[in-house]
Every structure is written in structure tokens, then in C-alpha cells.
Image 1: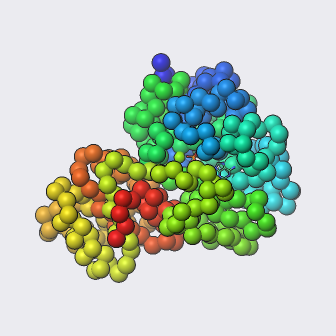
Image 2: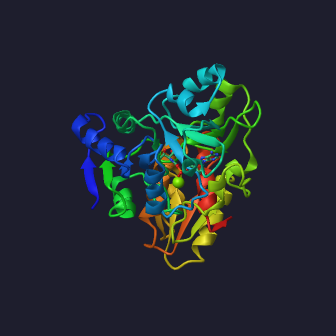
Image 3: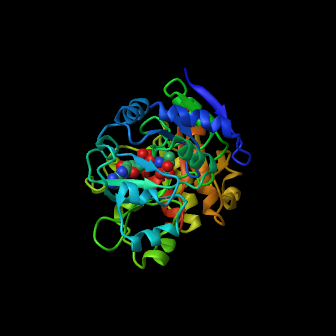
Length: 343
Ligand code: TXA
Ligand code: MG
């Protein structure tokens, strides 16, 4: 039922992408790689096609989708945007960022869950861009995971979650970032608001927009304003095995907290920074590394992979937190939401 196509992103065989693009034109569903996570796509201008996305994912219809486009011109086609604003966002395109803007009539209500705004994104992935170009329509796509599970960053994740539920799966290697795009809302007054932190950090946005609002919920600490981003009310990223997040403090305090948590379980694993191996290796406990203090991008790209790798294999994942800075904000947002307990 599901046809799996493998492509090399560095040497794309056009015919394969054309076949999948034809499926999009026929209102079928296609899983495809992006630079953030894999997406589950369908013709974003067809209500019939978009309905299939919600069904395959088990996603509630009140959670709107991101519309993926292949060029800057599309922002004028699907949103009401001024040229001054377009010039600013152009500096970030293509890239791992999504813009919430006032939508035009042509975008079906099913994509936006009835809202008058649309989340638009131009991904920086050659396979995603080619697929959209050949399909000749924008592609509506959420992350290609079963609703509530960690987003897929590897071929085996999409095969596990989506095989048998979609028409096509394009396998295109590992993703670059591993956390979903930064989402900013450009419809609430003059200053952009970060609705979801991602690979494009606030510092970069400040360079372009001058000022930027980071609400508390963007850190994953408090309940968000449901009206602004309905998707956030659902439990996210959660494996079945409980995640215990140990928030960053000074290293000694953190390690002490980790070791205390370890005692509460029969068969836990500690996921720690590379620099901290020395603290755990002589304690006769299971541990694995999830990135390094020196490079938070590495932590981000391994995050969902680790949550899936150890799910149901052990009885708790005790994870060292990192600082809320740069892409670390996106990592901590996902971890806080995935957590059963934060210490
Ligand atoms: O990196 C990404 O953004 C990936 C790849 C596949 O592009 N996509 C992704 O989609 O993460 P999804 O559906 O898993 O997350 C989209 C988020 C949801 O939380 C949704 O509520 C929010 O975007 N959203 C969509 N439309 C919105 C709108 N008009 N206003 C506010 N939030 C919106
Ligand atoms: Mg998602």
C-alpha cells in the first residue's frame, strides 16, 4: 500500500521526485524529508487531500498545519504581507523557520483549523523544495509522527509510524537540525512573537526584526495561550517510558540530582553530555551521551532519536538539561514538554 522511495539528497534522481509529486497532484499523501524533521504532506489547496493527513496522524482537526512553499513569491500568493516585511523574512529563506501571517481566501479552512492566519514555511532541503516545485501546489505538512510522539528524524522513525498509513514515503537520509522549525507570529502588532523556539535562535531574529517577544510558554515552562497556537495544548514528544529532566544548575548539583533519581528505578538510563561521562562511569549505571556542552546543535539533532531509541527498553530516561540559549531554548522546550517529572 505504501510505496517507499529512497533518494540521495546530494544527487537527486528527478524521476523519483516527479513520481511522488504526481501523487500529491492526485490528492495522495507523501512523507518527505526536511532540514528539521520529516513531514507528512499533501496538496495544501485540497480539502480532500489535507483530510488524509489528519487521519494518518490521528491529529485533532483543531490543530492547524504548516503550509510549505518553494519560493518567496508564494508568500504573496497565500498571505497578506507588506513588501517591507517580505524583505525582512526573505533573509531567512529558505530555512528552518515558519511565519504566521494573515491568510488569503485561497487557503482552505481545514489547513488553518478555521483561523484567519496561516503558518507558512519554505524549507531548506533539496528534496522538499523539488517535491513542492514539481507538485505545483503548496504542501500542507505536520511532522510525520503519530500524534503525540517524538517527531521523526530518521528513516526508521517514519517507517515505524507511517508505513501502511500513507501513499508514499521518501527516504532522504538524516535531518540536519532534529527539532522542528522556529515559529514566529507576525500578526500581533509590530513585534514578532516566538510561538515555538527552533533552530533559528532569538538573537538571529533580533538582528532582522529589531525586537522579538519570547513568551514564557516558548520555554515550555507554563501552559501556553491556546488561542494563539492551538497545537500546544496537546501532550507532545512523549515516549511511553517516563522522562525525568534534570534542569541545568552547576554541574555538581545536577549530577547529584541525577544520581538520586537513578535510585528510584530498577533499570534507568542516564542521558548525559559528553563532558560528563566521568561523573557516571564508575557508578555502575547505564548511560549514553546526547551531545556536548560545546555544541548544542548536536544535542538537538540527537534528542528525538534518543527518546525513541530507549522508549520501552528501560524504565526511566533521566536526562541532563542544558542552558536556555540559542538552539538550547528549543531543546529545553521539547524536553520540558516530554517530561513526566522535572527536578
Ligand atoms: O519543522 C517543522 O515545522 C515541521 C516540518 C515538517 O516542516 N513541521 C511541523 O509541523 O513541526 P507540526 O504540525 O508538527 O507543528 C506545527 C505547529 C503546531 O503546533 C500548530 O499548532 C502550529 O504550528 N500552527 C499552525 N498553524 C498555525 C497558526 N495559524 N497559528 C498559530 N500556530 C499555528
Ligand atoms: Mg508535530
